[in-house]
Amino acid sequence: MRRREFITLVGGAAAWPLAARAQQIGRVRRIGVLIQLAESDPEGQARLAAFGNELQKRGWRVGDDLQIDVRWGTSNDERARMAVAELLKLNPDLIFANSTVSLRAAQQATRTLPIVFTTVIDPVGQGFVASLAHPGGNTTGFSYLEPSVGGKWLDVLKQTAPRVNHVAFMFNPQRGPYSEGMSKFAAEAAQRLSVQYTAAPVHEVADIAGIMTTLAREPGGGVIVSPDAFTVTHGTDIIDLALHDALPSIFAERNFAAAGGLVSYGADYVEHYRQAAIYVDRILRGEKPTDLPVQQPTKFDLVINLKTAKALGLAIPSGVMAIADEVIE
Image: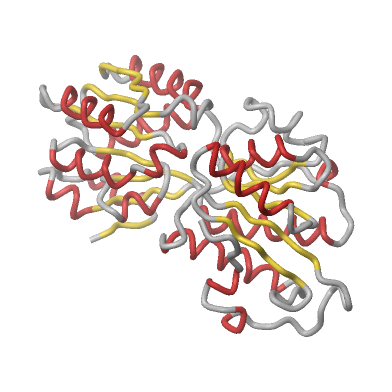
């Protein structure tokens, strides 16, 4: 991780339309940003660009009256803690944290500096906020998913690949403690759909291969991949193994469907970053995190990779194709 990384890396500040006037004349405000994806990841760049664009629209001039310091690759606790320590030395006015790991590190480091989070699953259940309506403390933001989506993932996978009759729910319990709750909903859905179900925690890359090999021993296997820092980091490995073993897979994030996963079902990350910028703007103008309710997603996108379906020998039912938000050819 570089010592200093600025938002101008995302195409440069000049790429964003400048606002008519600065909101805080004569004073430079500072935001520290924690992103679990690598700097080279196009998805991470797109999310950060949406964040910066929205701030520009609200009158902030990035690189002029607003400085944004970015730390990439905060996908494990040690790296996240180190990144937070670096940012706090820069005396930021606010921390913007993406992911459970980043938010945990930020809260452990400060209970006074405002923190805005995004793409965090079940923030109440994880103890980050007191409630959605009244978060309390120094933290607020945007919840990504609730545990009940675990059942929906199995529904979508079964509808997309009707031949699936036994599934594994893959997750890392340390990086995604919320996944156990999702797994319970998936297990309930499996019972309703008469699908054999296995909760499959993974701690190392070798665990992923072992689960895939077990699933592939009999026809009709499928895999649900819970989004956490571990599975996101090793998403390419999971996709490659699923394709190799002819296993239909479902992810929460569109970029994994685009990379070769069969299907994804989840909220729009880029939109969450844009919305988070609105909260950042309001806090920099004087509002308090405790007065801003945690927002939940209102729209979920279904993305199907038709190329992967063909490679798996699947004919996607017409009813599923009709409701897909995006079909990747």
